[in-house]
Image 1: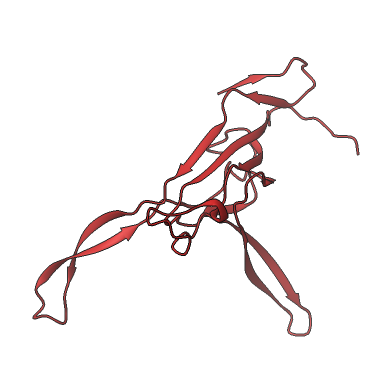
Image 2 (image 1 turned 90 degrees about the horizontal axis):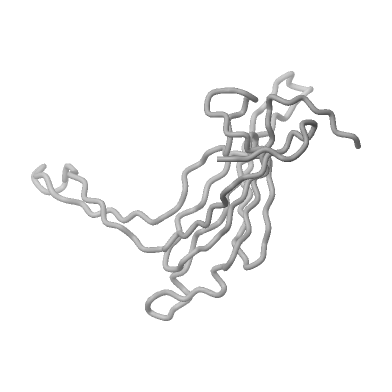
Length: 172
């Protein structure tokens, strides 16, 4: 939900809400029926643990005005804590892991000698630290949050919005 700013020439919108994210670091047991090939092919229940995280995504559609348009142009994430301050329920820091912002950057490398282009994906991991502010383009950066294990990750997310229907040229 948004409201517009006070002038018609300003393309920016003011968000009414921010998002406070809590990844609590607690596992949940998912029971899956699996085939046990080592024990007479009997069915058994296998426990798999999953931890809170967030799968790879963009914060807005890539195409202006495309399906799923939400006006997000810039994503701002402010970390309120980090792993260094965290202890798990056993008062041990050793089992606290995850919670990194994983950013995926695709790059095309031209090899002129072999007359071909190679696509590579680089992953950049940004660790949560108290007071760290991360900004990135909402339409372009594919990102995820790695599973948080043994600690509670707090972050505040805010989006800088732009009404893509208004064409404005910015002066540099």
